[in-house]
Amino acid sequence: MDQKPVEIRVLGSLSQIAAGDWDACACPETTDGGRPLDPFTTHRFLSALEDSGSVGAGTGWQPQYLTAYRDGLLIACAPLYAKNHSQGEYIFDHNWAHAFEQAGGRYYPKLQIAVPFTPATGRRLLVRPGFEAIGQSALVQGAVQLAADNQVSSLHVTFCTEEEARIGAELGLLPRISQQFHWLNEGYADFDGFLAVLSSRKRKNIRKERAQAQSFGGEIRSYTGEDIRPEHWDAFWDFYQDTGARKWGTPYLTREFFAIAHEELADDIHLVLAERDGHPVAGALNFIGRETLFGRYWGCLEHHPCLHFEMCYYQAIDFAIARGLARVEAGAQGEHKLARGYLPTETHSLHWLGDPGFADAVARYLKAERAAVAEEVEVLTSYGPFRKTQVEEQE
Image (cartoon, rainbow, N blue to C red; front, side):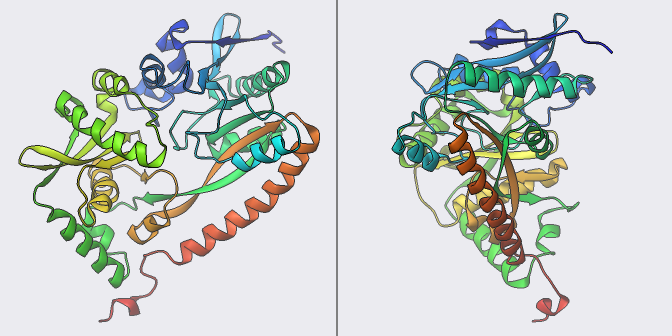
């Protein structure tokens, strides 16, 4: 049996690793010329966060990229960050931090394997094909060892895949289940095909909302790739600042991120703008994956009835159907999405806590929480907008 050792290295910047080496682990599916499953763990996206100053000194997200080498070959890597707060994660552990500190512990700093500010499910244990088992094990063990050696309170792996959650649990991490609302494409030919499977009342409500949104006094346009112009980002930055100030106090992304996105990420982006007299008044930003459209940000300078629903949910569905994408992930939270065709879906994370007593308490909490989330998903699904019997269609 081949027993060549695996060497773990921690890198403070993605500039220390070639894009081709990182992406061979992050998105090996692109060797066929297609898109990555999601763009968020690609070298270009993570570099944009770093190069724009959205992560790094002063942000509370300090890069500690974890890499695993075997015989000089990068076989696995993970976007790891040292954190001194719990902002921009969307898998909330504020209560854990409060309880640990009330008991005299120090919760921060902690380690986080995640894509900053991005509540989108995707691979977090990035492994070169052919090295899956040894690579995933090396990353988990390396991250736990790094946490223990530095005496930090905890390690978290957020919005990982269901398979990674299973593997992580087998390696001793605590699995956690949360939920989001996702739209699934059942092979619809167009938006009307989607509406046809809804109950009559929900179908009428969506048509009414779309008509209201379109009456704001202008036009709604979609842009991607080279159709996105620098002035579009000027407008969207205003929208993003407004939303960020209201939701988080300070926007997570810098203006420079959007400048880099224009140069490096435009083909990954679907930008929706509501324009009146040539001037955008609202916008929604989505990212395009191989099978999924990921809703990320929305903002406006004027408020119009149902414009948010149209631009964030219905335009996303239109785009997914046109591109043959299997789903739309509409981001964190929001039970209002249920009435618009987005169904509750489980999301996964993994956790390691260094203090044995604290770990035991969290493990008991997570067991109860998993049961509660599973029940909530079942109940909410039963209240979904989809037609249950033909009787509902009889006027």
